[in-house]
Image 1 (cartoon, rainbow, N blue to C red):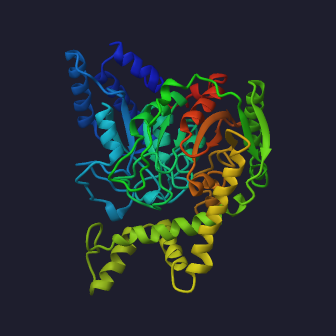
Image 2: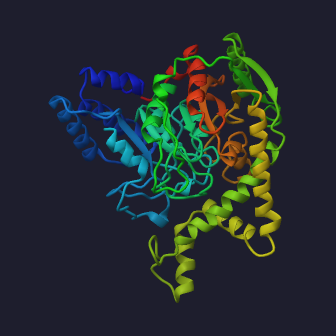
Length: 485
């Protein structure tokens, strides 16, 4: 039961072949069995999940109208506010924070009848690429427990891969959905900036953050995106555009189909097994009738530098609120107000968050803002222009999601620059505000998943999902599951 896709489970629920309570209990049992090894969840709401499931079953028995995800468990990244449940952002600063309201996407999940099964682990405040920066625990990759699941949404990706939840929500600021999806062998989508409301998403970098879905397959991602996408008047960055019926058009081919392959994405640092799998995926697209052509994103080599100026500057501003005065951790011992703020932030934040706050504060300081931050914004504009030009020649841009398969836990913690390069292929989509998806496209010789990234113009998620489904329909990579005893 727990290895089936979200769409298959929803069909079984609607036909009465299983109850929502039985399905939820099966996933809770899997969590109890597998969590000691995987550590994907920070909090599991067993009693609440079963109560929600029983309520769905009762409504179904009465013949009442049900939402599109009725009875299906969904895991939520612990960066999204949940009323009455702790939302820690995997940080000591928010260890005891219980939001008085739900994030917009959580409200949408409840309206759709989804069962909120628990909150997943992440890099503290979504700052990281391995989920090793959590203040509470290190999440492990279900395909190899000695390796990371990627980050920052590593808990959500690992929960889906391990069969602990059929669907999960993550957030993507520089690759934090697509990179862990690639490393865990699942499907993960970063919607266009503004496609999904950010209300109730605890901010890291406000002009880059976007909420998105994880699933075993493209159909699951499409179903979850249908629920969470759409205009929210409470979020000024939410775009008022209709939400297409993503799941209903998946099987419709895209013709003509031209796929652009950036020459800049196949250079130094790309693992040979990853390149081989991605090239094979592109060859399959060709056999299916697509035109595969080389394109150029000439400013992509500057994306990492631009991102770590823009993102850290916004993080410095957003995280200034955690001062021990209004809310969040407050030091127990201090001399005066300034000392209290210093100690509270020093005790509450981890090393990576401190690093990014200091870098962001520096690049916004007098004498450096023009030289660094404003220059990074100009480069960001050039990166968007590169994508706009490339999309004049093709429907989607394809390439590796991550330059390497999953790396070992602890392997990059002492080398922040190498860690940052984990997102070298994903960051551009965030800077440009476009849509991107990672789908499984193979395995290394040692059994580690490899992801293919497809990127599309703004608000072209429907076309992006159809093109991803075209590949998925011809392969079985998405049906494979790790062996967790």
